[in-house]
Length: 456
Image (tube, rainbow, N blue to C red; front, side, top):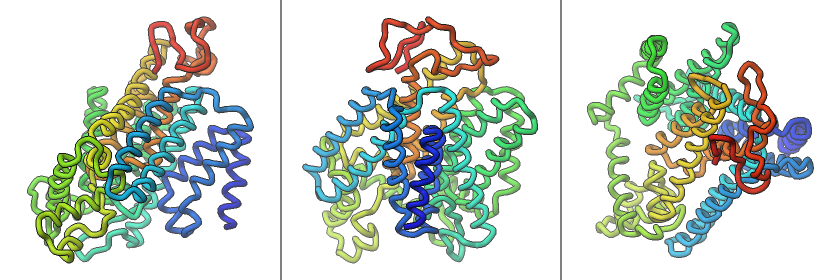
């Protein structure tokens, strides 16, 4: 209880001083939530929620909810309404309401961020907090590996969990920080200070390798390709080769033995993880085809999965050994969301994520039009962070992830940075000149329109 009281008092003090730094600390708490629960017990389960309520109270007192994004509000309200409709027609309404409330927390979080962040410098500060939290997670992963405190401690396979009890979840989070470290590596001018994002990126790579996550490896290859394709220069080619060689030298042999199964399709020592994932895809697809309109209701994938075995004539003991509890996950965010909520709701969910990515693209486009020439733009870095989580979600069920929704909130805030004096565009510290915005558009309601660029 003392930890909770201290945390709330601390965050209230920070929030009154700087809401941006309070939001950054809140983000770090979300990133390290698994560690907080591990080391502080049940009191840590709802700590980010209580901190968020405290920050919201300060924002209301200081009247800093200035850029309320009605587009995001309408899209997410429709999404939640459709999810409720699916729940009412689903298998277990009580469980569905619980799961929908978790999505609602993510939506509420995104709305707060979108309404609060009004300057480019705020986005930069939050990106630094995000990177800092993820690097801390990588350090914890290394520490666990060195001390033998593995999340999965089998005779043949040992995997460090780091930020989460599930190493795959940790790998996904660490992957989201790579593009941010690359942004700051190119952004910082001082060679000495460049060492900070450089070593941050290397630590993230080491942490990803120590999780032994195959999905993390595939996502790493994808993110590496995206970053390289952005600027396929000789310098970046050398850097990419150096990173590959470094991973090859530092990663333990067990890592490469596990990655080899991606090519051979054969798991070592009788493992059945890959075959189980394939079966989940097949049966998950069957669940969706049988319930394409409304789905089976949020949180009911495991129950629906058990029914597919029952329909096959399986015994109760066989079903339990194959599926486990009714809370079994699809290990694929898209398959799970579509099968639980139906086709239309799934498309709307994807549209919100796509809109976030486009907002980051327009964010960089606007900054470029004002003279900010960057190889890797701030919007690009954050969009790739989301892409990393979305790509890794093909192997995980992460639709409710608070860090994902925080990044979505920043995306919608970036699209609604309205007033010229709040853009903080810094081409040799050059500020925007008065009158560059379309003054026919008010500061209320939809996002501001700039000459030549509409940020939405």
